[in-house]
Image (cartoon, rainbow over all chains, first blue to last red):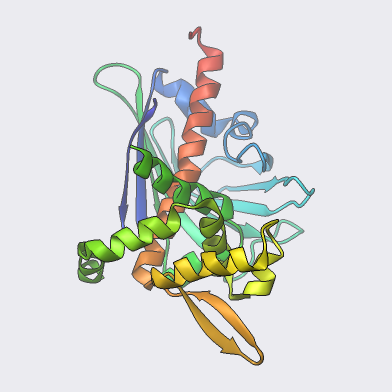
Length: 162
Length: 118
């Protein structure tokens, strides 16, 4: 199981996920740097992602859309804040309109990924996501994270089953 | 904010009621729907094959756990979330973590496909 731990800081509106892969750092970096690989993990199976543009360097922008079971296509963008190959990525992730233009004042998150060689071999990756405000989080929920929510609540079932 | 959370979770009876209320997939679904906005019981019932009375019962369990409130809007009664905003933040962060749980599992599959793994 690649997942090491997940923590959240309710005060800072931040969550952190730590994971370990049996693959070298450069290989893990390619999961982000190669848009064709990104497409295979960014969206859930019900909402696969397509990356329409991918200017993967500091100051660059990335545009993507996802395709839902009913043909709906929510769009998103990344504003690349820092790209330090192969160890650190910092970006802002937000929603876009039907033309792919960022929605003014729409909900966004700041995401930081750090990738480093693990002492025991393989690669450790840490993802940190921060929401700017509780209002922003609620808006994010309105714009479509029901799937994550349903999964989060279903974890309670697993806890009860243990 | 932390203190509120600690006090909230320290009340074991409250936690038990919440866990019981959420231990049912229909009730979780109702919560997910009303988190996005208030719904009348009639609107909620339209989403399920069970009877209106059965949906009403599920709403009552959520209401007893303090997870939803009933608000009058005109002639309708709307079911809305009543959990503290601090709890709401926790639920949303959990949801975000679940999205990442899925992503990491897909990353792992992708990496395994490129190395010779079992």
